[in-house]
Image (cartoon, rainbow over all chains, first blue to last red; front, side, top):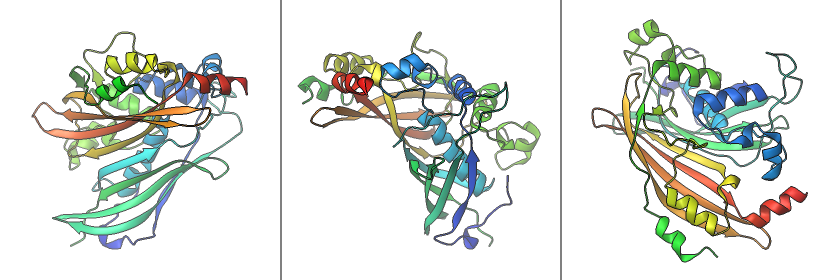
Length: 154
Length: 171
């Protein structure tokens, strides 16, 4: 976790510290078990072909949690995630494994975001941000938004 | 065009579920995401934090004590939705996740018990010349053991018509 940020220090347009992620076939199995989503679309090649996506795809919900991590890592322990949304607009395909623990060469995903609004509501000091997951080509596959309550210095 | 009876699905709910938020399940979830936040795994750290104990990452709502046996999907859907949509030519095997919207009202702690149910809030069709999609919106409200609403989750599920699947499979 990084150092605590404060509402006073944040400006509209400022970037959220980016977060790199590498989706692997192994990670998708792990996510299926931890989330309870056992749709074979995410691990069964024949099934994925039969429903028209070609090969297993990364769970939308895993990309969602990457974006949650992007925001919660950035806001620090004193920050509070109030609202969050994202849309799974395009499919992502995981890297295959080279060894038991190492992925093959391939795509790296980046979670990114910017502050779009800074305001006070009641006793809460808030910021809104646009967030997104970009694939290896820099295309946005998962856009979203978040509203965060930040601590104040005073 | 969707058959009239799909409109009747709006407002239907799943039975009430009771989810337990277990320490181990939180760790497993956080690990699967690649989280390293000590608030989710380090009890000493969490005790000294403003939360006072381990919390769940936003987006984790535990596991049901009374799960549907044999269900492959995490998202709870009223059974009628599956039946009616399959009859309308949208098999559930084609389901993909469309997106998620959350509102968080207060933290979820390890040891909490959440009561929740999922209600269909909207169903709409986007018909094309050869392909059609159906968007199903569902809202789940989570209430903790103290009676406080801790979060709301608004999910979008997308179903594809049988025709489109055949077409894509031929590509």
